[in-house]
Length: 64
Image 1 (cartoon, rainbow, N blue to C red):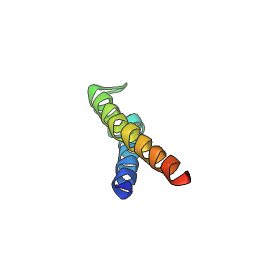
Image 2 (cartoon, one colour):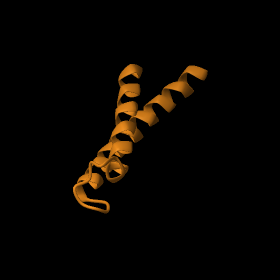
Image 3 (tube, rainbow, N blue to C red):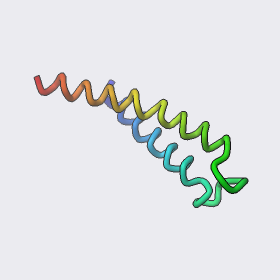
């Protein structure tokens, strides 16, 4: 489902941005890159990479 993939791509991107900039946004409890930011960034990559790959493959199939 293409709509689901786009939703996962956007959600993963937002999660990644929030995780990577948590300290700048005032969400970090400790200075530096904490374990919660590591988990958030890994989860974001786990959403973005497969969803982006499926969107890419679907676009290549539609071109043919």
